Image (cartoon, rainbow, N blue to C red; front, side):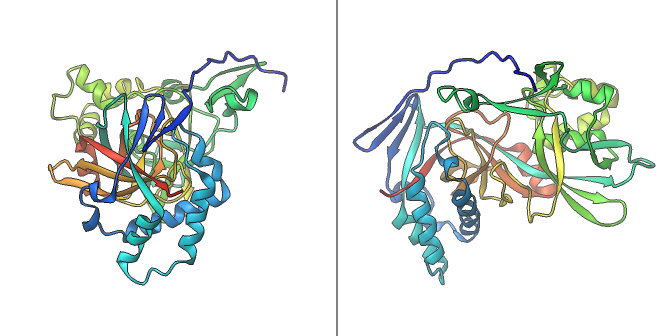
Length: 377
């Protein structure tokens, strides 16, 4: 392929300094804390996070550089040492893993521009009906990754440029933006169709969540996981409907959004197409939906973060609230990303699978804080 002309944007990234017990990276600051400062730490059951941590270690051992791609950079050699100690440890009691965490990590409160408060939402694994063949009511394609989707990274061209992933397609000798949602829905797409769904709204909502369990017309079920996206910005359908007055304040939950879209098919597609981002999927045999880290997500323990700041595979102590107002204080781990998840103190909590998860995840919009756990050095 002939050389593709690209316009790169220079980005200034502040260097990291260490001052006493504070680590400062641009507007982000890590303030050293003690485990006794973590609300609810001693009452948290660490059994599920232990499994998630083990999955993280399998990735870190293969891709240790994943820990140093954001503004917060974790010492990969120190983390690999912790993973090795984990494999050699005996966790015959549930409390043993909690003790292991306290022995091997230190918590740091994450603040940005002087504030430790951020926004925490939630997502879930959707469910839809589908078929392997196009027939009857199964008329809507669920696309796999297109062959003409091209990815470049700015850092591959110049080490001084940020680690920025750009997606597009080649038209002649030029890299151009990939097709938008509206273009794909209107003109179709030269891509494999992995399944045929029976409801456009369910497919759209699956794309927002990133994955789903597909209930097939032959009685089987398969997991549909995220494969890639078209590179366009994400526009939230809830905020869009609220701004237009189509939903009222207090009605912007995922179940309400779903009901409105299905009850207003004549204008639903127009509004859905105002979100130009389109997600491509793949069939997965994993035990759960695959996150950006490449491991199955764990309900109640996986968090989507902004990797501009927080490295994937990080252990995080989360302090926020559930939609009911009940405190949500537990150990989670950064295993996923999201187009709408932007900011140093920002997270999307993975609630799990099923209708109850939909109801809870769709209502969560809370403030909170988190601590990142760094290996002791």
